[in-house]
Image (cartoon, rainbow, N blue to C red; front, side):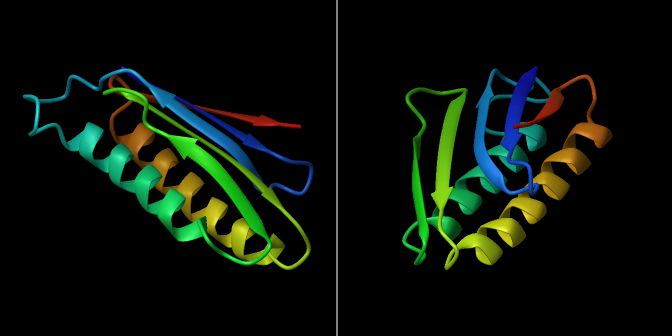
Length: 109
């Protein structure tokens, strides 16, 4: 199972997200759940990287692991909010469709 933990601040803005595990919903290289989660997380990271007002750190230290942390100032607030909403909606959808393969926990700080 892929376990995803997202951290949102008091305003609901993405501050961190980490994923670990394997979906085991298909053969390696053909697993739609793994591919979907990986695509969403990687795209979110690339989308917020380099944006004015947002500092992002993260990586995928080995197969089955991904993490990102984001800080923002007023200039990057709205963009990060929108990107985070898109990411959360996508991850929630995958986990609802494949509950045996993917679990999302959202923490608010």
